[in-house]
Length: 103
Image (cartoon, rainbow, N blue to C red; front, side, top):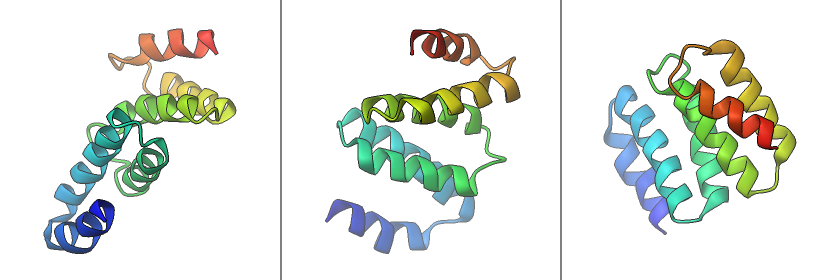
């Protein structure tokens, strides 16, 4: 119900940038509520429309943690590798390297 209300009512009234931000925060909110499938969906939607968004690199790291929770380890490894390769100077790249090594 909550998901439908947000997608059908709230997001239809927002600007594109606001929708991108909202998808990112939905991914985070679902993650911290242990709703990993909804989190994955929100992050994937965010990444499909937010490639140029300032938090895109963060989303790669965050979605990799969702994949780990869902036991989708290969997907997590691919995302972490992409994040490290594409955003080597990002503040989360060291955490991404550590997480990748632990898998």
